[in-house]
Structure formats: structure tokens, C-alpha cells
Image (cartoon, rainbow, N blue to C red; front, top):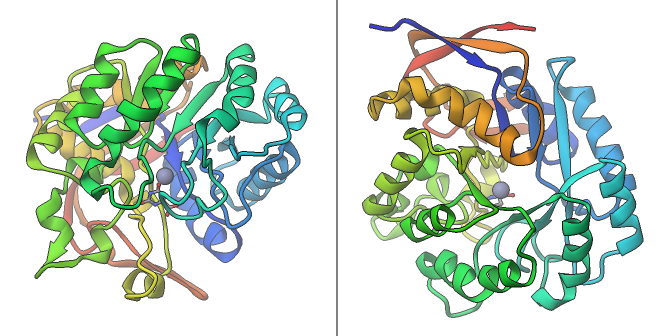
Length: 348
Ligand code: DOR
Ligand code: ZN
């Protein structure tokens, strides 16, 4: 039996760190394990200019527990983005990418894109600068069933973007369906991030007595067992088109349990790599974890693979129920449950 695994230090290619006291509390968990992260720009005031991105990066660094930690910031696309500012941000590597939130699909997406055509000029710049488009792949349309939104986005929106910008590299974030996985597998210049929760939960876990369990509620919502199995295969089978992105998204406990403002988001940063290790072990694929956690991502982003490593040891531990610090209290995903792997030391 294998008791230790050394991994090239992972990166989290999709995480929410927020702002203010929440940022102060949660950044340490992502920076403890990962060398880099893509910090999503859907802060209360979205990151729509390179000045804001610069400031955000510095603030995150200030609260990180590891000097080497590098937050990477995408630009939040809006219908009326300042294109000159956008180009400067990309040229100077202040923006790593651009993030498309269709308007009103998820947390802090009010300022997102209402009409795809309005961002075509920005996408042209992005393609010119050889930078990536990150998409929240859900169509926002009133009467569209929550479970059909990923497919509708792919069919009605993503296809148009790919036809118009064939050279543009795209990441379909937190892919949640078999349809999405197959789409990524059969097309060029597109990859996907996969969260732990989409590989651990199905829609049966989303409801308790016909009510939504707020702690299992995220966007895109978790899907069927068939989708889950397909996602596990995509992650665990050495497939270079899929990589780690937790979509760890903290919300204060009060906002998760309030009926009026049920916020989507699952907070997994405290145990992210260990959750993935459990999944890979269940799939008898623990030796494929490194390629998913540490190699496929940088390759797709055209960035160097990290030169530092971490060690995971076989050690049972219970994830604490919450993180709590000053005014902040957030429920941990899988809190109170047992994991088999634990990060030991960080060799820097
Ligand atoms: O569940 C989610 N929470 N999905 C998202 O796309 C956004 C995130 C958040 O920011 O809370
Ligand atoms: Zn997200």
C-alpha cells in the first residue's frame, strides 16, 4: 500500500477569495497548498480594470500564508468594458485571462454579459493577445430548467463564440455534465476545470425533503449519477483536457441558510487537494492525480509547471465543520466527514 505521494505543487485554476474580512480569513487555505490560483473577479465590485486587478492581487498576497503564492486575476467582462484598459492589462500580464459571466447566472453576476455580441471586440483582443477566455457555461434564461443550462449555453452561445474565434483558447469552468465533457473532448482549443463537489454529489444530495440543501447548492448545480461518473473518468484517466479548479466559494453561514437569499457556492478550500486525493483513490487512479492537479493546467495556460512539491500522506482526519474567525463563519464542504489523505510538508 502506498503511504505517501509526492506531487508537483498544485494550482487551483478556479477559486473565489472575495474581499474584506472574508478574503482575510479564506486566503490562507488556498495559499497553503497551491502555488498559484486564479482568483475569480466576481467580487462585490467586479474586477473590470487592470488597476483593480493590480490592487486585488496585492491584497490577496498580503493575506497569503506562503510567500511564493501567486494569485492570477482574470478580467470580468461586461457589455461596456473599457477596451483600451483591457488590452493594456493583458499586454502587461496583469490580466491572465477574461471571465465571461452571463448576466444573473450566479453570485455577483449582475454586471455580467447580457448579449454576447457586446463582447466580440473584447474577444478579438483576447485572441490577438493569446490569452484565455474562461466561461461560466450556463445560459441565463428565465424559464430554463436549472439542470439544462450548461447544455443550452454550449449549444446556443459557446458554439457561436468558437465559430467566430477559432483560435481563442477557452476553459469551460466547473464542467458539470456528460454533455459538457464530451463537448470538450471532441473540440479543439477548449479544456475544462472539474470541482470536487461535482464528482461527489448528485441531485439526490441537493434536496432534503424537497427543499434545497443550501450547503450542497452551487452553480452549476450538481447533476445525475451518470454525469458524476463521466466527470470522474475525465479527471482520473490522464486526460490532458481537464484540470483542477475547486470553485471553492465561501459565503457566510447566515447567507447560506437564509431562505430569502440562498447563495450558491460550496467552500472546499480547507481540504481541496485531500478531497481530490480521496476521489482519485476511489477510482484506483491515485497515480494520475499529479497530472490533473499540477500539469494539465499550466500546459493549457502556457505557463511553467511548478518547481516545488507537496507530500500527501495516508492519514485519517476529520474536516472541521466550520472555519470561524472574527465575524466570519463558513461551513466547510464535507465538514465532519473523514478523509484518508492529508498534506504534510511543503518543500519550497
Ligand atoms: O456556486 C457558485 N458560487 N458558482 C459560481 O459560479 C459563483 C460562486 C460564487 O461566487 O459564490
Ligand atoms: Zn466560480
